[in-house]
Image 1 (cartoon, rainbow, N blue to C red):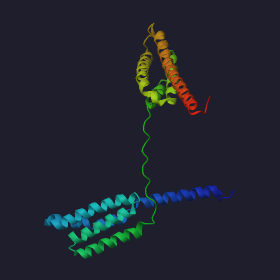
Image 2 (image 1 turned 45 degrees about the vertical axis):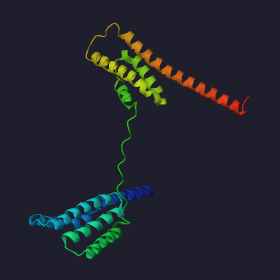
Image 3 (image 1 turned 90 degrees about the vertical axis):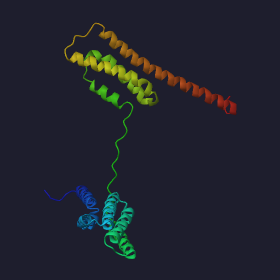
Amino acid sequence: MSGRLPPWRARLERSDGIAHLGQQLRRLRGTVLVLLALPLAPTLLIALLSGAQRPLLGVLLGMGLLWLAIRRLRRGRVRQASALAGVATGLVAGLAGAVPPLGAVVFGAMAFFGMRLLYEDSVPPEPEPVPPPAPGPLDAVRVRLATLTGADPRLAPALEGLRALAAELERRPEHTGEARRFLNLQLDGLERIDRSLAQGAAPPPGLPLLIGDMARGSLSLRDRLRAEETEALEIQVKVLADRLRQEGYAS
């Protein structure tokens, strides 16, 4: 048997290798800035011990701006990172290094253009984290109904009615608010009853009647929502027909 990989497998492994390399390179973004900031640590210590306020201010501003530049760079904002690195270099040179203003500007410009040349065409930025979708109004109801899937069989009629009502609300989410209290009330009751039955409690004589009333209540609310939707559609049809007749487009 030949040891050669099929072409599709070779392409897949090659693409996976390139993606892995891109992830590794993204992690290295900003390494140059970190190396640039390392000499500032002893300078900061010396400025703290000597009490020199001007060098201390320059080092603190430079380190803070370099930290912001690294964050911008990891998000792919090379121009902003380059500008921050240039300003940081100029401040460190002018305040901490006692470089004349013109020289500090030159050093800052060199850092700016050096960053642009180094990172302008580098690997793409880290993908922005995708926020989780907002929970829907019926998500909690679905979860609670799912946990009651294996409930006591005597509760089945009420659960079937709730599932039918929830399915109707899926199609008409604008009515979810008015039905939420009803759903929560029934689910709370069914969960407590199921928990008690599972712990060995004897069902009271009125339990079948209660379960039947709960099932009929769910189906009644579902039917009412359907009737309201039907009525709204009839009104829309009537209004549209009257408008067409007024405009002369219908008899």
